[in-house]
Length: 243
Ligand SMILES: Cc1cc2nc3c(=O)[nH]c(=O)nc-3n(C[C@H](O)[C@H](O)[C@H](O)COP(=O)(O)OP(=O)(O)OC[C@H]3O[C@@H](n4cnc5c(N)ncnc54)[C@H](O)[C@@H]3O)c2cc1C
Image 1 (spheres, rainbow, N blue to C red):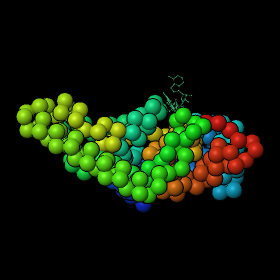
Image 2: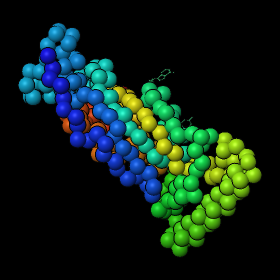
Image 3: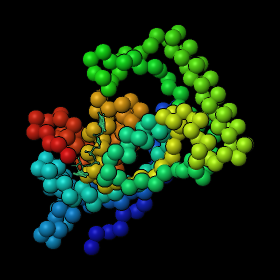
Image 4: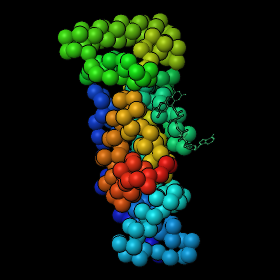
């Protein structure tokens, strides 16, 4: 019998991302050992000590024997702008429940204000390259705040006139509104997400969330898996694999 793992101290921790966003680990089931033991159930075996267990885990990832990694599950609460949410929900292997702008009115400071303004990449249509100079950037940020305030005044006006929250929200700057959701995913599909969204090709506003999940939660929760992931999936090894 596998002993019951005591509650992980990572559970309940929250990391700040962007200006007002965050990632919180709500729950975690499993560990590196759970992955190894799941693989060994094929022949009804369990741990054979750290060296052999780690070697087996590396073998599994390297040879894309991925189902044992599905035995570990992460549940997060995320607060991020809609631009991030929009890209995140394309990952069909996650389970989501989100805040509803039909039930709860948005608040005046629920909008993302970027720290820098990235310039359009001349060679890649969906990428940015470099930043606006600080003087131009400061002017644009002032314009943005002004734009948010005007939109919010109209939103409040519509609510006061009795317009439903579900319709009044069309006055809000859609991509910039901060949204909160809970989501659950297993370690195999989380690695697939991280490989795509930690990549330099991914948009900054989702990359920072992927990096926060990896560095603050995935890596400390699954140290052997992270080591194998960096070696075989993030292509630091010539025998890299795709998840
Ligand atoms: C840099 C970048 C740019 C992007 N640009 C665009 C864009 O311009 N336009 C756009 O629409 N999207 C874009 N996307 C989104 C992208 O096309 C995927 O929808 C998203 O990354 C989710 O990937 P996924 O389907 O592999 O992940 P998941 O949905 O999590 O699925 C994981 C894996 O499960 C399998 N799977 C899941 N569902 C199915 C299914 N129904 N049938 C078969 N296999 C399935 C696949 O093997 C898949 O890789 C972009 C993504 C990135 C990272």
